[in-house]
Image (cartoon, rainbow, N blue to C red; front, side, top):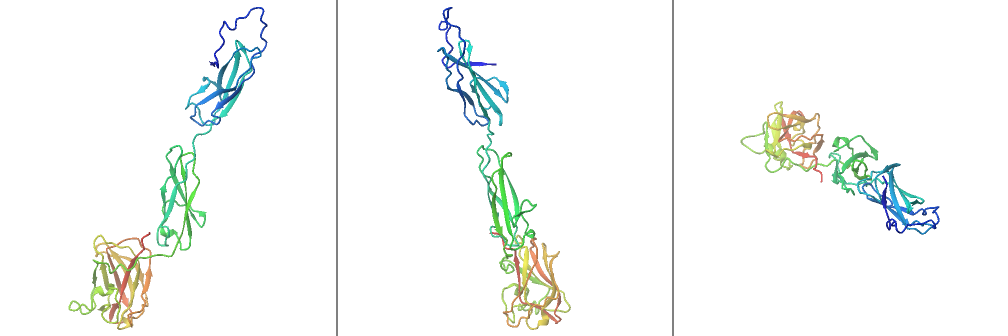
Amino acid sequence: MLLLLACTGPPSSGDDTTDDSVAEVTSGPSAPGVGISPEAPEDGDAMTCQVLEDSVDPDGRQVYYVYSWTVDGVETEHGAEVPADTTQPFESWTCTVTPFAGDVEGEAATASVAIIDGNDAPGPPTIRIFPADPADNQDLVCEVLDDGDDPDGDALEVTTEWLVEGESIAHEGPVDRSMTSEGESWTCSARSSDGELSSPAVTATASIGPPEYTGDLSANEGAAYSASDCFACPDETWYIADKAFDDLTCTTTCTWHTTWNDGPHWVAVDFGEGNEIAVSRYTMMGATFSSSYSARDWELQGSTDGGTWDTLHTVTSAGLEYVMYGSESPTMYTFENATAYRHWRIHVSANEGGHELGIMEIELMSDAPPE
């Protein structure tokens, strides 16, 4: 269908009245200058076919124009205006403008545009690695703080990727501490996507430091202590279970002490309901009075109810330093554990051969919480 739009309106029949004395018209108007506005239309833009330079009729008659459009070579029913939301990305639209002077058709002119995909790529997300300075015994999380901005208001999805020493690994989500090693460089790379286009990647990098632990938790306020037995109990409190957890060292009454009688013996701490602790490191000190009284073989055990015990760490042939002055160094033990228990105990199955058992000090520690 051809739709007509006149620049000044077609001439009236009176204006174009001719008689035999008027020469026959042999040519029509010249081609007009034609353009399309906007010059780079996006999907959803309205378009207008414009005459930028008027046609000239050699006989000086009034000129009017007929507009037509094709889309990818197929005719479509539009005049000079193409409404918004009519176009689709990557279509080729051509406007043809044909000049007329009266009934005489002149030379047509065309202008073409390709419809640009109106979807703009989103901006990158904002991310961080938590903790920022991770220890070897801490999990890693790539946190998305902001999804990024989309110029078109589209909903965004953020995808992340982990790299170790610059090499991508097949892992998504949080990184368990068992996957990391001290000294490694871990990078989280992230992009935002609107389903069609993605943002540039952004990265956050952290270096894995040495394991970090809390201080001694065994002397926490509210903790209660018990033991299988103690020397001179219950009449005296010189060597009660509390002495093994009081952070005091000396050569006389700063130790938990009991007769051995072939054992086994144990000393325990109850952190109280709601105060469960995931111990992953502890220290032990030997006995005073005689090196033969020191613990040799034991198990560190945890319990939720104080009745059923799980063994978390086992030591044999310990060789603890004999406490002669009270300033001797404790021996440190580290193991993997993420399970929190209310009750913890050292269950000794063998000492160094003497007829008594003594433990100067026990300290219990957890993995340090991330900051």
